[in-house]
Amino acid sequence: MKRSDQDNNKIISAVFAIAAAILYGASFPLSKQILDQEVNPFILAGLFYTVQAILFFSIRTVKPADHANRLQKSDWLWLSGTIIAGGIAAPVLYLLGQKQISAHLASLISPLEIFFTTIIAIMLFKEPHSRSEIISIILITLGASVIGMNIKTGDKSNDTMLGAILVLSAFFAWGIDNNCTAQISKRDTLQIAGFKGLFGGAANLCLGILLGASIPSSNTILIRIGLIGIFCFGISFVLIIFSMRSLGASKTIALFGSNPAVGVALSWLLLGESPSFWYLIGGAVMIIGIYALIFKPVKAVQNT
Image 1: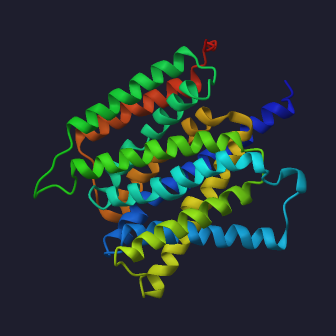
Image 2 (image 1 turned 90 degrees about the vertical axis):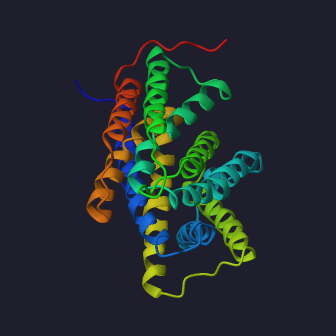
């Protein structure tokens, strides 16, 4: 049977979401390596997003956006939500937390971004939802609870409960960001990513400097930060926006939720970290929740 253009667009959007997941999953161990070299989290978050802003605005200088797709005055409320939640709050909360936990733990609890994105989409934006999405939410919550109850703290552990809470808060902020971005996803993608990077990066750099931190002097570290910012945060964000155009916020983030597998694998390869048995069990339950959300569609239940 010949596929329709709509089906092809959904397949392409799914590929974009998975590619974004791979790039973002790599950010967990790569960011942890930078943080372990005593780079301030505010400065690191600021540099990640400033670099992507420079890239995207440079592209738009050479090739301006179509007038019809440019951001309008009516879009700035949603863009402000994206900037504040996803460009300022989320990255610094995430990096502050990741400094206190292992990279594989941050990877394993990242599906909670799906939970928050879906809940916000259903409760605030009235997206239709199905029984499979409700089952998914329950399973993801259960998996996160298993991980949370087995976080070991103390001298023999690299994980702290505060670190996990900070990372969890970051995923909540990104859940808000994802839903705000979905409202303007048909606008120019590079404009959205550029403004998010510009204001988010500038805010966190200023906060870091006010707190007495400084920008790293090592060119090697700066190059690594630049590459992580461009690929793991910038390009992955653009791919997510493209995916949202056909799949919507909750389904895009469900596919994007495959990033823990990448994060755990690279944490083992690059950092020598190995997750505990209960971490893996909790992560597996959350992955089953993702499966229920993506591959078990049931007739949508309309909100009343």
